[in-house]
Amino acid sequence: CKGCNMPIRVLQIVTYMGRGGLETMLMNYYRHIDRDKVQFDFLVHRDFEADYDREILALGGRIYHISRLIPWSASYKRELKNFFRSHPEYRIVHVHQDCLSSVALQCAKECGIPVRIAHSHSSNAVKNIKYPIKAYYKTQIVKYATHFWACGAQAGNWMFNGKKYEIVRNAIDIEKYQYALDIRQQIRSIFHLQRSLIVGHVGNFTPAKNHVFLIDIFAEIKKIRPDAKLLLVGGGEGMTAIQQKVEKLGLKDSVIFTGVRSDVNRLLQAMDVFVFPSLYEGLPVTMVEAQAAGLPCVISDKVPDECIVTEGLVTVQKLSDSVENWAKHVVSRANMQRKDTGEQIKAHGFDIAENAKWLEEFYLKHG
Image 1 (cartoon, rainbow, N blue to C red):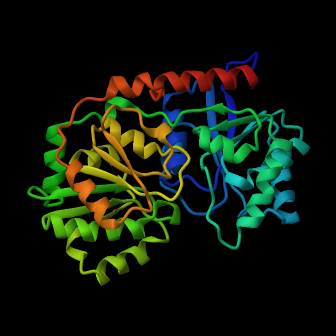
Image 2: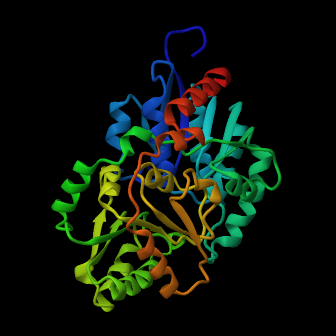
């Protein structure tokens, strides 16, 4: 706080702190800011212990639990306002709730919180029965936020309806991902993959990640390279349906579901090619990580090209293209020699140390 020796405390409002893209981005910043000056606390909308909770507590953060977000619920808004009023130490709220961020931002404004950040991490939403509700609440964000942030241009343009926004990079600890042959050999040995072609993917099992298409591509890859294995890193409700599809196609012995992992930087070393056929993205931190590991990447034309931060590693394939063409292209990219890409990634502005300093200074100025 200003005029005292205590750090200012910033309230991060999230669904829960699992190992998703936005949560990993938040933790990267949290680990690298000066926590004697700025502390993060988290308001979460689930009542279970999530992947990052213990680390948050160890770093000095607090975790508060609130009811699930129902945007039209008067009782939810009342609960949220009661929280804000009983915690006057929060002068900054930083909201990461996609289109529904406007609910927390409105309540924060009505409770007199002066700095209200809306942060866009996506460039679209699933077109299901909830989509019209999300689309409405998305239009309300510009009324209640004081600052507009996005992971990339597509995410900012989609979320903020022409309002000016700041790009806050999904930055990483570059050295942690640098290619290392010894780690590659260790991981391949653990998973019994020494003589295999390893196709990799990192992402939770949500519709946007397009795992259904990824499995179809891999089925074609197996026809070209019978030794191929698919390493799927991530968790989520959609995993069961993908496991069933894998079994139905007779690929059970060739697809490894690692679940949620804390050692993605090591798993990337074991892969030969990274495949990312998403239906939409904001700016995927996992793509920056894959390039930091020197991995050749094949991505869909729906992934923002802002995530291409290296020369010659990433190629774009149309989602409308056939699985046969995808498979041929993936196999042709899989034998590239790995190299250190750290300087290129830093030059594109994705070094966490530099970005964390910027964020820390913003919070200190406004808190």
